[in-house]
Image 1: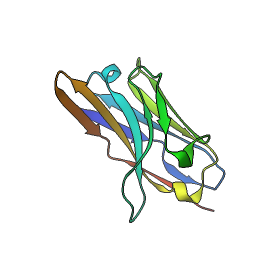
Image 2: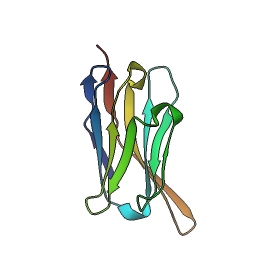
Image 3: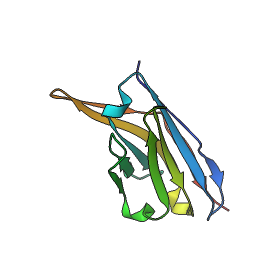
Image 4: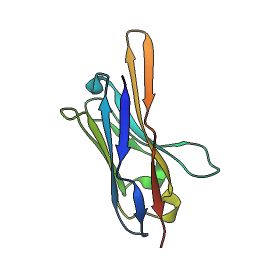
Length: 120
């Protein structure tokens, strides 16, 4: 059974930090690229950051560059999102995503999401 379980969300003041964690199970973690998406109320889901299966390639949406860092630990089947200098516009539900291609078939899994609220 595939599971992606996010944790670490919460309420933080502007300028503060949070670290999101996603624990994966039920699939071969080191064969999947991992991403964090977010969705704010009334907006479409947005790709925030992606890390390749070996942790070498990392990409970020422009709005979080220099503030967010994605990392993974393939020994622990975990992906992290360190979020610094948070802004009110970062408020959203953050989702963990796994995507991989095995053979000729693409597989994609989602977590249930964790709320991040940035407010004074």
